Length: 220
Image (cartoon, rainbow, N blue to C red; front, side, top):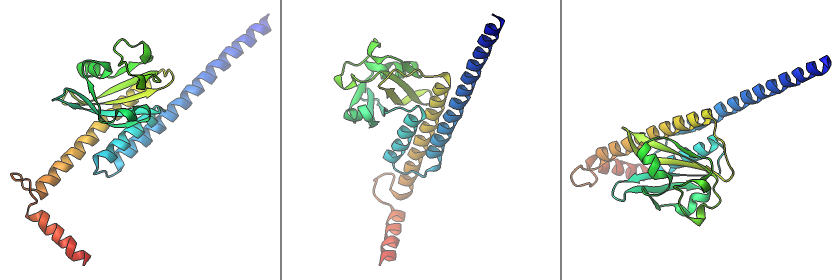
């Protein structure tokens, strides 16, 4: 009996050690994915909004090993969120506007915080659309600027995905960095327009014409 008890204790200790090692390995892999995603977002000199959306969405999906996702931006005149970039199951939704009255976007817009739904089929505010029939778990992250939701980053899975606290923190941090990158690109575009176009007429200014002339002369 004493030997059995010792064996049982050894088995419990071994199981605990395996669990601790598995958790440590998952943490290392999560940090590695986070490092790669953040590096891709902050080190690539992007001047095209679509290219930046590519980097943001692909790396957000990579962080949590998701096959489907999209980015939508808020339109005040609609009002709603227009899908501007998507992957996987959301490709058919490109350029469509998701109203604030249905779905998860409306809740994210009101609450201004991450919303995670483990089983979308049982979600009371789900959108009844056959194109979403294969979705299981969904997480939406607000892209906040000055306490206002400017967009939503959505990631989903086709099987139930139990997000860990660390995954939620990692996704939120990445979403915050993504908004910084988008704002940086917007400022760059504004500065370029101010530098090369007349503020009143919108026509190319002298500096613009001079630079193009120099380029033409260099090509000859």
